[in-house]
Image 1: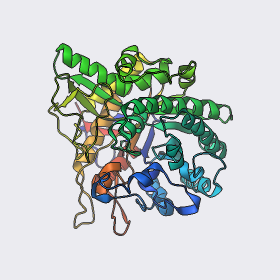
Image 2: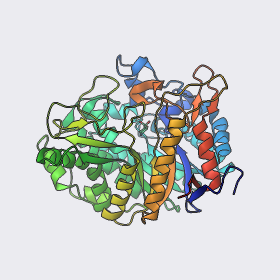
Image 3: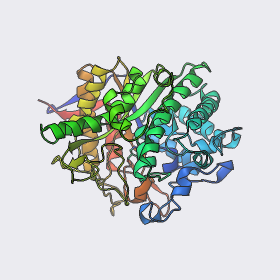
Image 4: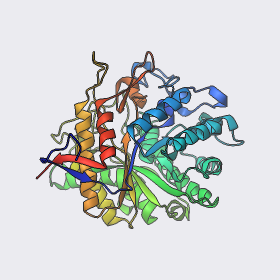
Length: 475
Ligand code: IFM
């Protein structure tokens, strides 16, 4: 028992080999967008278009992680993280998305990985977190099948270079967002509002995942390879037929379209019917689903919230306000309304619903082949302030993490093979169309000086990792 533990508290212990991590993505933190031969990504172009990002923010500097990665790894080590999930920027490695590798770009990740390993932190690499090389967008982007094959080549280049020292690999982060926010609602780069093309993009992102899994496996190494999906608990507002249908549609497009493809080798028929009403699905070629469902070792799950939905038209078109004017990402189900479930919300307007995490984890464990999982993102934005004592007292974020880690513990106790948890995110960063206004970090970043200040939630997380579990009131 430590000095802070009393007889009135008990420890909810996690398995000894549980992975305690934090996650980031390249475009949101690196900056240095022209350094060492990096090419242009769709986000570099998107942020220059008026009205696409709040306040006209861009990620030219972001939080300067490209130059400050050593300092950032030191912070991770001080927090006691056992793993760090980051993404590789495709345009650093292949500036135009295909062709020869840019060694200087690849070397940055080699240095980062070595620094992590030197501090005893396991690197977890994600290959694609939305920064498609602009030249590939000009050749059709994700709606073009060719992009999936380019991705497999890129995956092979990175895995070939780092596979000797990185064991955990993920292909595409949140394909739902890349497809439906990028090509249907237009909230994300490349900002197209082309619902039929968004469906093509979704399929090609899945195909890219499968081709990359095969390409990396062919190279040997003892890699553990995963796909990363963002899953939501989905509830109908009432038991009416219309609301039940709305929940089926949103669960289908958000969750099952990706889970079934990756883990069962088939798209759900009801979702194909919904989408087939919008566009011919003739781009799904014979054998694609076999490729997409190439065996993976792990499923990486990003979880943030629950959707409560209604089939009655005229309500809100998405769960929370969009930062700028956008179309609907819900291709074929645009009539569905998102209603207030009555729970407290984060600064994003996202409802805080940790029971939804237990629901998602137990559901995946029940409905899909016994696939080990990690939570690869979970976290919350709040309106943090640096106070006069040079600290950020973010009690709401600590409460959010604590509640969701309790949910993880509950899921493990129920038999879910959950192997780790990555807090989103290590430090405040570029939150896409929201710019820098939404802060999800464990670490505050002063934008004028780039000084890093660990928030109270970071200290709490460090203590939780040190203890190997959560201190809770004894029953
Ligand atoms: O910041 C994003 C991240 O890039 C992907 N998942 C959700 C996070 C919060 O919006």
